[in-house]
Image (cartoon, rainbow, N blue to C red; front, side):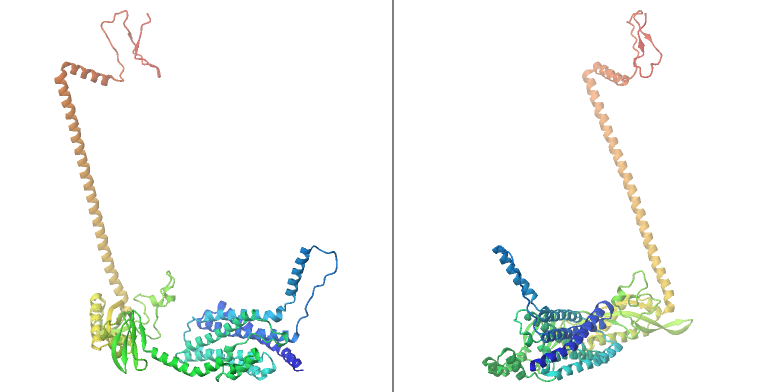
Length: 637
């Protein structure tokens, strides 16, 4: 009879668990889809990931509980057998293969896939997806937004009430339903998550710190529960399955059971272990020894942790001022140091060599800081407010000062904006480190206020013409020297490294005129540079022409000298040949000259020794084209 009542309770509770599981599954999937595809607001995207992970963890507990309860109410499935009709006997090898195939087929068809493994698969997959969602939500940075945080805190608190009713419902069932205690423990997780996220949003709305810590703590607890569900699903694959009539859902969480306003009851834990595994922890000598040694062990670990506060390791770029019993003792640099533990010895860290830059600007609502969106603006479009350097437009965040001027013969004031940044660091000496620790609380605020006062005095005793026409390097040098002297007189330990002046913007009325003056100055510089370039070009061209002419003259002179030397050598050779040969040389030279002169020339040779009868006839008719001949033809007679 009790078993029948238990099965009826399981069957009665299975459908509510199904609807709850499907509701959490749809809610988690919708939140994750909205975070991945829909909204691009970082705060809303992170909240969707966190709430989606909580919903998936709840679905990973409710759906296996439904499947297990339905399988238990249904009972064991009838085993299927394989019956073969008699026939002709097969060879022995074929019979063995057929027997092996039959055993494999029977082992597969007799597996209760829905009752045994579907719950494990659902818990495993949903737990992994929840872990991935928490991984996406962890590094997100949430900026404060008054309206968003106010609405978030209210909506989350309102959403916690239905979960509280669900948790109380399963807590009221108790042992009457097998899965009720584990679902009651699992319902505490979304309650903790909604309350934690609501508290974090409320702290951001009030401008209080620690909101990020609370969100990270809730994410860690949710991740531990999801990891526990995944591990339970993996272990379920390697343990023998309990009988179906006594089987309980594996999707339980010990970590979720620790979420309670009181200390966990170890007696109940002992009873649960004795009931589940048959082990009595109260009679275990090991646990008794641990219970007796727990207090001394905890005290010893606390003492060791306290003593370790007297050991400090400083890096190469770190230093700290060491205080012992409220008095500064020394400045500790990089290395391992032993000192009095806290609170007798305290180390106050000081920056060592870190250079910072602070702008002297107004931080009102009209300030336009330089953001990544401004840097990534279209190069062909209008300049973003953070990088606009035109004089005829206002620049948010710059310091504005009144400057004396004269307009139409009357004295008046003009507004001048200056974009100035100060590069500073804490001094490298030990004295500067102590001064920085005990002399100032906010170095940046002190430097900004001192620089603003100095700029106000400087602009008060200068006119607009002096400011716009001054020497920028001399102004930066004098301003840095005066600011450093002020920091030194206040014993701040601050070194002013540099003064960076992006620009001093004149009043809007004077901007156009001063731009014309600067344009004329720039044009004059450009013209001077252009004339210098033209002069250099002409000088280079003249030098090139002169060099070419001188080279040509030198080459011609060398050629004439060489020709004269050649003629002299030939003449001297002819003279020596004449002295040696005399008339023979002259005759030979005459024949040579005739040979060269008459070469390729048509000749008529007349010799007085030729008889009249044998004399040739001079043919004065020009020969035909292509016909050869010397112009002499013999007589026909």
